Image (cartoon, rainbow, N blue to C red):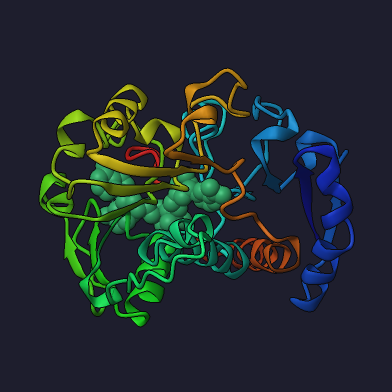
Length: 307
Ligand code: NDP
C-alpha cells in the first residue's frame, strides 16, 4: 500500500477524487489517496502550485512528486523539495496546445481577420499564399513544441525549430545554436519554451529585429520569454504585425496593461492548453506506479536547467 496526497486548488479535487483511484485500480496499485493524509505517511504527491503547499519538509518519507502542470517554474527552485519531480506530459495537454497553435497560425497565415473586416460589397480577390511558402519558427521543441511542429509540417508549413540541445523533428529545420539563426526571416514565431533564467527575454529588441517585417508572435509559453517593452516598440514600428499572447509576467493580466487595448495584440487568458483530468489522472497514476515498481519516473525535471 502506498499513500498518495492530492495537493492542488480546491476546485480540482472533484475532478480527481474518483479518477485517480480508478486509474490506480486499473494499474492494480493499492493506494490510500486523499487530501488530508498525515505528512509523515505520504509516499507521493500529485501537485499543483496553486494548492498552497510550499514546504515539503514534513513529508519525511516522500519519494516523488507528480506535477499537474507542464510548467514547473514555481516549484523547481523549492529547496524543501529534494525528491524527483515529474512535470505533466499528457496527450490531452498536448492536443489542446496543438489545436490552439494551429488555429492561431492559420488565423494569421490566411489573414482571416482581414476577411472578417472586409465585408464591404467589394469583390476583391486576395488569395493567401500556400503554407509551404510561410516560414514558421517554433522556439522550444519539447513535448509541446515538437507536437506543434509536426502538426504544422503536416499542413506543409516551412517549419524551423529551436531547442537547447539538438533535436530532430522530421520535416523541420532543427537548430540549437544562436537564436538569431532560428528567427532570421521568420513570419510567424511560436514560443513554447519553459520559463528559466536561460529563456528570460529571448524575444527582445535584437532578436525581434531578425524577423521578417510584420511578423506575428504567438506566446503560449510563458510571459517572461518576451521583453514587453521591446515587443510594444516593435508593434508600433510595424516590425511585428501582431502578437497573440496567452501568457504574461503578471496573471491575470492587469486591466490597465497596454496589451489589452493594443490594436495589434490579441490577449487570451492562459487557455492555450489545460491539463485535462480524464487523461492526466491516468498519466499521473502511471508515473507513480512506475516509481512504486522501483523504476524512474518519466519526464523528470532537471533542477540545474530549471525545466
Ligand atoms: P519541454 O520541457 O518538453 O520542452 C521545452 C523545450 O524548450 C525543449 O525543447 C528545450 O530544449 C527548450 N529549451 C529550454 N531552455 C532552452 C534554452 N535556454 N534555449 C533553447 N531552448 C530551450 O516542455 P513542454 O513542451 O512540455 O512545455 C513547454 C512550455 O509550455 C512549459 O514550460 C510551459 O511554460 C508552457 N505551457 C503553457 C500552457 C498554456 O496553456 N499556455 C500549457 C502547458 C505548458 P531541449 O529539447 O534541448 O531540452
